[in-house]
Amino acid sequence: MNAPATTDTSSAPASPDLELLPRDLEPYRRGNTGIDWVHRFDSGQPGPHVLVNALTHGNEFCGMVAATHLLDAGVRPLRGTLTVSFANVEAYRSFDPARPFESRQLVHNMNRIWSPAWLDGGEDSPELRRARELRPVVAAADHILDIHSTAQDVQPFWVYPAHARNGDAARAIGRPAVHLVMPQGLGSGTPLIQHGLHGTAGHHGVALVAECGQHFRQATGVLAIEVTLDFLAHFGLVERERGQGMPAAPAQRFELLQTWVVQDPAFRFVRPLVGFETFGEGELIATDGAREVRAPCPRCTVLMPTRQPIVGREGVYLARPLD
Ligand SMILES: [Zn+2]
Image (cartoon, rainbow, N blue to C red; front, side):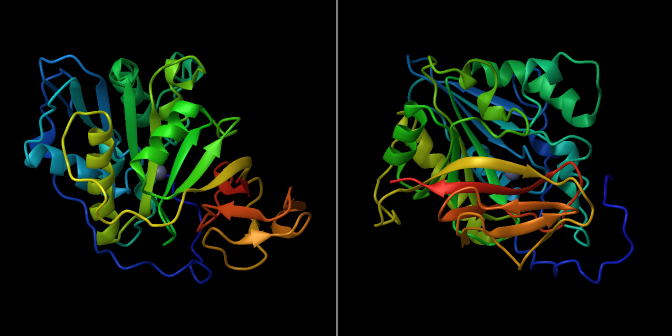
């Protein structure tokens, strides 16, 4: 569904190896919250309510790996409350190995619709219906880990709104070592981690996206489990040894300056990009029909360049290095 209308695949990038594949989530459908694919465990002890959310994008399987790990291993919080959710299961179930990037979403990008305008609005789609179901789940959480992965095989990184509470937590957790900070949000919609109070300066809660690596790599699922357990340990819900596999490098931070949304089917980069390439100020990065995408700052760093441009979806994120 919603595939770009094209029969010419000669210019499409080669499909990656599919080391990670979907598994049947039907056994996880019935949780204990009255909402399908949402499971909640209350320790009975005081402490924060932490939400671990998977599959905001249907083909980002590492979150599914981490969430099913928590459920299969019977991980229970020592304090506070743990909620585990699978978000866009409908898109996930549409996965076709011949078109592995198509099941990211069915209609709407489920990570751009967490504003009252969308959630209370009159439009309908599988993603809007599911987001409306999950709205109380997201709103109830003190702290949120939203687990994602990337189309290209690049180093893992955090993404979060520029509240000190988020940066402090991401630094303390330690990995991934790379941070993408969003001072003005995404510029292309409201992500899950900015829903309601989580998008406000005065809130106490931490809300982070972890981009754990390329969608279909085994290592991405392994990292997602590690980051999830580290996140839970940071808030005292589980105990675990720290320091294993931690990066020696200090945090490397980038600030998001601009999200370029594709306007023209003829969008193309000046050369093949995978992410983390840098451009000098004013240098041409892509053309979007008659428009030019140029680096807005020195050492401009591109993140998440699209594999296949689709009009109305993000083409590339432009960031500047901090520190
Ligand atoms: Zn994603």
